[in-house]
Structures are given as structure tokens and as C-alpha cells.
Amino acid sequence: MNPQTLLYQITETSQFMMSFVLVTKADNVIVIDGGRAEDMPLLKEYIGGRHISAWILTHAHNDHISGFLAEYHRNGLADFDIEKIYYHFPPYHALKGRTDVPSPSYFDTELEECLADFAAIELALAPLAHKVIQGESVTLDECRIDFIYTYHDGLFSNLMNDASLVFKITAPNKTVLFLGDLGPEGGDVLYEESRHLLKADIVQMAHHGHMNVGLEVYAAIQPEACLWCCPDWLYNEPEIPSYLQNRKALRDIGRTGMYGTAVTRRWMDVLGVKTHYVTKDGTNTLIL
Image 1 (cartoon, one colour):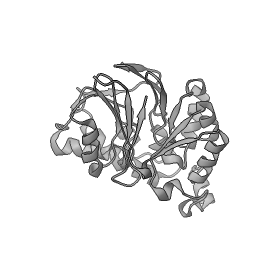
Image 2 (cartoon, helix red, strand yellow):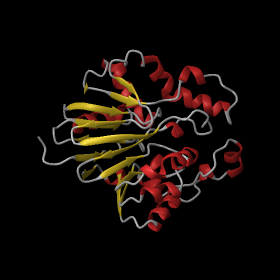
Image 3 (cartoon, rainbow, N blue to C red):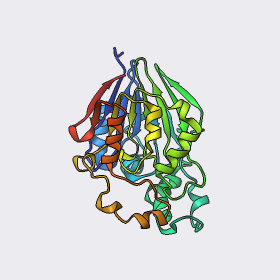
Image 4 (tube, rainbow, N blue to C red):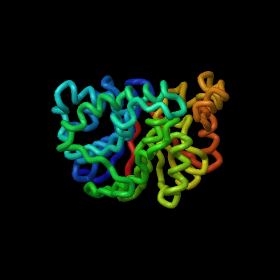
């Protein structure tokens, strides 16, 4: 037994990956994403052979779940004691080949990055897998997880990021809201549907803090602390970095509201947030 509920925000061993391990008082674990294949050894250190009550996969991008997929292909996840895998990804086979989207080439790239691989093993994962329904909750030891947002059909300009699971973990002393890589359009839907559910003590910054949800979402959350999955260059990124300077091209494919972390960091200043945990500084440990 542990005297406290602990959340580890694991430092990156691959670029801007996202990986969290929550250890409950009963010494069980909740894993969130995990990163890439090269991030798995460090993830395993923090899991420490414990029972994994829940492994939550936020969305099908390689910096979030390719490590999970690599472990499946390596030995069928034999290194982990997993009770349940929680996810809700876009339907690969139903979406493959669609052309009525803002940018068919980008859309296809999104489908193939990790979702095709996951779709190929989804049936084999069925004994462990649970496809999340928006609005459902699960209680694991002293923690409750409320799933607030899942994939919405039709949000296609930023397909995979806008399919991110959004969920709140309520622990004995703190609440933590995870936004995955939710983008501006997904953030609009989240705010319209569920702004009354967003208040939390701590927030994981959407999409590493750039090209993410709008200020109104963070204002509804009212966080006292922020979790940034960012290397130094990204945490200190300008308002409009080089890859976002062609604003017309972004608008033409429906990618509006795309700005660097400088904008988001100013928002946090406006909201009065004083505490920032950033993976560039190493693994952070929070008592929940």
C-alpha cells in the first residue's frame, strides 16, 4: 500500500512524446499513452511490474501510442499486467479512401500513421479493450475517471488530434484534466458540449501547448497548474513558428487557430497560473 496517490509525468526519451503513470494507494497503475518504442524502457521503470488497472490511449499518433503498438508486436504485451485498455479511435475502414475532406492527402496520412496498425490488431485486443463512450465513468481504487469527450464524426481537418479522448481523473486531493492533442475545432466542440464539466486543479496542455484548444477552454478549466509535454524548443516556441507562417494554406485546409506555445503561455499568465510542469526539465512527480 502507498500513503499517497502519485502521478508521474515522464520526461521524454523521444521528441515531445506523452507518457503518464498514476500509482494508486493500492499500488495499481493507470498508464496514459506511453510514447514511442524508445520510450518503453523508462515507462516500464515507472510501472515497476505493477498491475495496470487501466491503460488509456488518447489518440492514434506515434508520439503517443506507437510504443504500445511496438510492445504488442514484440511479444503481445507480455511485459505488462493489463486489466483493461481504454480508447475511442476513428473507424479506420469506414474512413479509408474518403475524399470529401478538407485535405484528402493529409487525411490519408493521418489514417496510416498508427490507426491502420491498431485496426489490424483491434480484434486480438478485444479481451482487454474497452471502447469508451462519451459520458461514462470508471472508478479504480481511490480514483474516478470521467470520460468527457471522444471522437466526433465530421471533424476532419485535424482528424486524429480532434479525436483525442478528454477525461478527468478525480483523486483524493486533486483533479487532473487530460486533453490529449485536442485542436481548435475539437476544443470548440468540447466547450460547447461540456464546459460545465471542465473545472480541474491541473490540466495537461492540449497538443503539447501549441495548435491547441482555445483560451475559453482553459478559462473553463481554471487550472492552478499545467502539465506540458515539451522539449525546450517547443516550450519556448514563438507565436507563429516557421511551419505555421503560411496562414492562407492553413485556412484552405480548415486548420484555423494554429499558433505556437507563446500564445498559450500568455493565456496561462492571463489566467494567473503560477505552476508549470514541463518534461524538458525531467520527470515530474505530483501528489494527487
